[in-house]
Image (cartoon, rainbow, N blue to C red; front, side, top):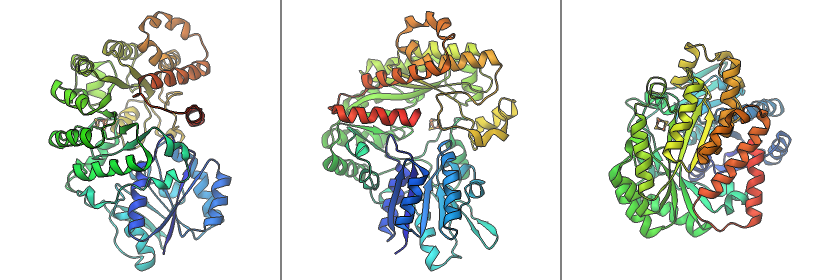
Length: 476
Ligand code: SF4
């Protein structure tokens, strides 16, 4: 039996769906799957020596990929013939990663079916054609185009949560669990990978795919029965994207699961009927993106054609339905002025967001907005490999010194001012405080807001303390 080991470097704040989904499929297909889940490179190497797998696998995100570069290179040096394969957004949109991380193969797009095929082909038929893979061999790299999108998500086994929970009691005992009801988003926001994903998969099947309602309810029931659930976070880009699906789901969810939940929507999809249904089925918080308070930047730069009035109306409808509102924003967009950043702040105040957050835009490869940032001179593509996973500290874009300093400080006190608008008059004072102090202030404000807005849950003091430590080591 082939032995494959996932490597996850650094403890997580929530489960990683890609690994859970792929792990269960690999196990079903007869692969012996394990996980090295460690905080240091030394620990990873030690566990690798003990496990001696046939294949090491990574699921790489932009930013956090950087810590895997020295790991994969050290593995290559220590075990030259050990096969290393990676997938995820980083390899999909930055295929040069195959050399950067000294990998044997990378997966492009979804790996649901193809990763298993790749693993099997290693023993059975190394020359087999596998869709959406770049495979190193014989001095060159064989590249194949992406295959068809998997439509029947119920042909997949339920995600393998135990792969994390067996090693991480913090995640196992967390009062909430996160779920994905499907895949895909039809919108084309310039700062999102979906734009590129949809383009790559043109003619390859349906972009929007949902798990059948009964299958998904069974998946949630199983987790609820095994681990207990005080509330759920649905990680789907837009949970209600398929109206008929959601109507069926909402009724069954309330009857059979009956716990509060948090989900994402989009301002242009908010209406009284849908928000009423969300509330009725147990929704506690709706998350949506405003991103910028300036309509021109939103429409022309972000490709999100919606007006401020539309956004304000959506926020009012959400509140009228008795739901809380979580809003995400970006500071430091290409062409953004300090005036625009203030407009973002003001729009969030007007929307009365209970949980506002503002992060810096990161120009990752594969996003249209990165091309715009390069073309307009806001970003030097030579700095791509320096991009951080932490989007809360600083902007990698070029602004004049004074504007950048103010944007960075405004971002740090953004949530505080939105929640307590009277603090706005203290902005000139905040601008004189060192960034590092404001950074830690922003972390405490974030915790204060998050604890206050989440659905009520019974959590022990010990668990809360552990989550706090994990949070600070993740963002510290
Ligand atoms: S709506 Fe959200 S998930 Fe969909 S393309 Fe825009 S940013 Fe991406």
